[in-house]
View 1 (tube, rainbow, N blue to C red):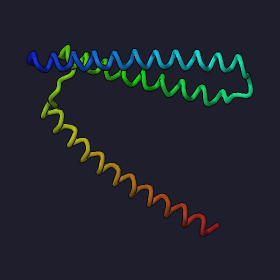
View 2 (tube, helix red, strand yellow; view 1 turned 180 degrees about the horizontal axis):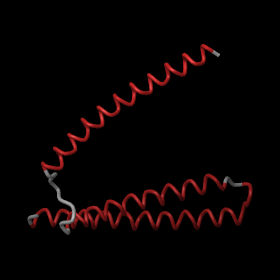
View 3 (cartoon, one colour; view 1 turned 120 degrees about the vertical axis):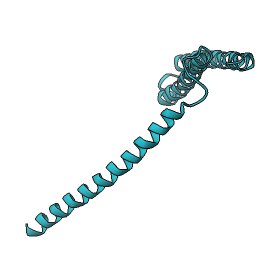
View 4 (cartoon, one colour; view 1 turned 90 degrees about the vertical axis):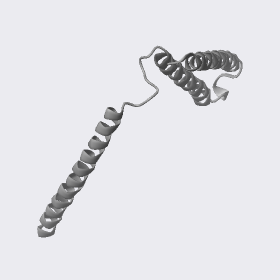
Length: 123
């Protein structure tokens, strides 16, 4: 990896960390608001909606954290930016094999369905 790529990765990681921190602040504010609203209005509120809002933000935080970790791994050399041609070739072979197996599975399922149908016709 050259210096330019390293710098781009580092900047992107920093951007995502700031985004994550902003989401954490948003979640904290939302939780505080919900707690205050619940204390004030109680069961008149829709607790399910509150929980959904908080969970959506938590999910977004987890996604950003996953992206940060991935980019760190790229920056540290654990994950390459270019696919290994051998791995790509192996994947293509496996996809062909899976296609054959799925075809064979469908044939067997159709055959077994015919047997079941014949048995049901005979009572």
